[in-house]
Figure 1 (spheres, rainbow, N blue to C red):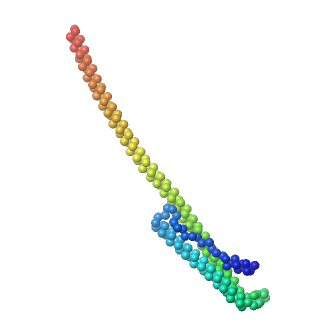
Figure 2: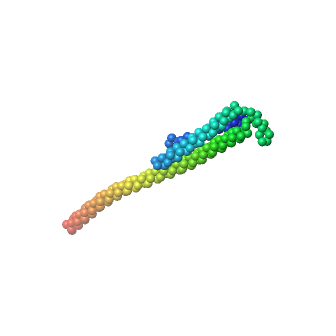
Figure 3: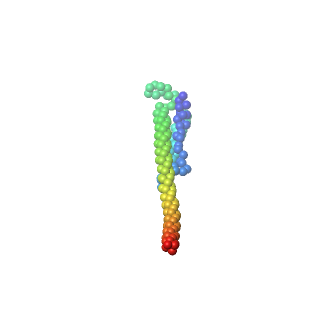
Length: 195
């Protein structure tokens, strides 16, 4: 079981976040630059941390390998049987615990980075939806202005048409009044001449 625990510690790896190839939608060029800068720094730190974890585990494994040559049965302070020297055993145990703690911290860092990236993605999605809404409103306003212009032109054309009809009817009315006056004069002449 001790050998299995050592193998588990040696195979502990932290899942690193890949650097995104494109920033979330809605980012300005400056925000995209900062986003890539942060992702790159986090990835470099995570890579360094993973390399440090691997070096610590390798160092622990090397020390265990070196100690295999010097194995001897010894007793510790509590009179328990030990294959390794108690000092080397404690050093190896401390080193393995330190490497495990380091790997845990790296995985915590990755969790934090993942939550930050998710928050940035959510903010980008909100920004994108607001941008689409603003574009829709702008299109609606420009369409409303166009519709008003079209309606105004239609009303102006209708007014001109009605004014032309009024002028035609007025001219016809004046013409009919003239004809009536002429006919009344003719009737008056005819009645005077017959009388």
